[in-house]
Length: 134
Image 1 (cartoon, helix red, strand yellow):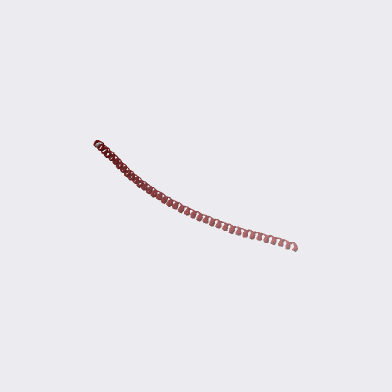
Image 2 (image 1 turned 120 degrees about the vertical axis):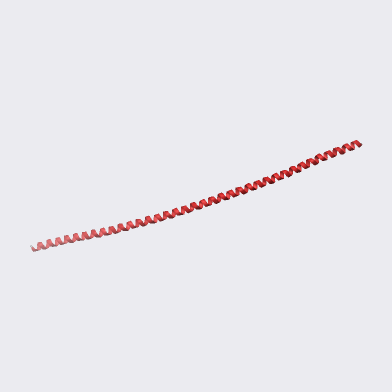
C-alpha cells in the first residue's frame, strides 16, 4: 500500500508539473500572441498614418495645381476679352472712317452733280436767250 500511495503521489506530482508547464507555455504563448497583435496593430496604425499623410499631401498638391490652372484660365479669359475689345474698337474705328469717307464722297458727288446741273441750266438758259435774240 505504501508503494501504491507513493506511486500515486509520484504520478500526481508528475502530472501536475506537466500541466503546470503546459499552462505556462500557453500563458507565454498568449502573451507572445498579444505582443504580436499589439505590434501588428501599431504597425497598421503607422501605415494608416503614413497613408493619410500621403493622401493629404497629394490632395494639397492637387489643390495647388487646380488653383494654378484656374488662375491661368482666368488670365487667358482676361486676355481674350481684352483682345475682343481691341478688335471691336478697331472695327468701329474702321466703320467710322468708312462712313466719313462715304459722306465726303457723297457730298462731293452731290456738289459735282449740282455743278453739272447748274452748268447745264446755264447752258440751256444761254441758248434760250440767244434764240430769243435772233
